[in-house]
Image 1 (cartoon, rainbow, N blue to C red):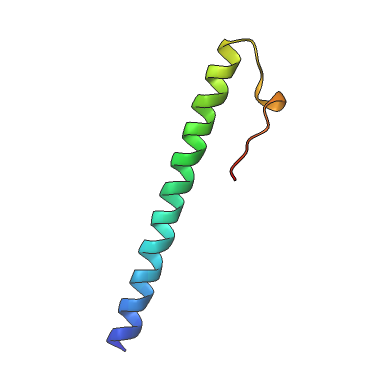
Image 2: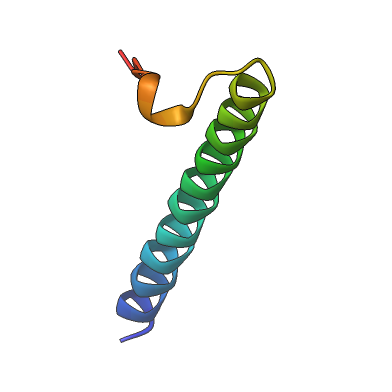
Amino acid sequence: MQTMLQSCRAEQSRAEQSRAEQSRAEQSRAEQSRAWADCGFFSDEIIYDDG
């Protein structure tokens, strides 16, 4: 039972970590599109290449 609890907690912390990374990525993307907007470009004209 204890190991189930531990693996569940590990899974939760992994999920939280990936959520945090996701929000960081979205934040940097938002900052990027703001920077583009300052230069007269708008984010719908920008194609993001995550590859």
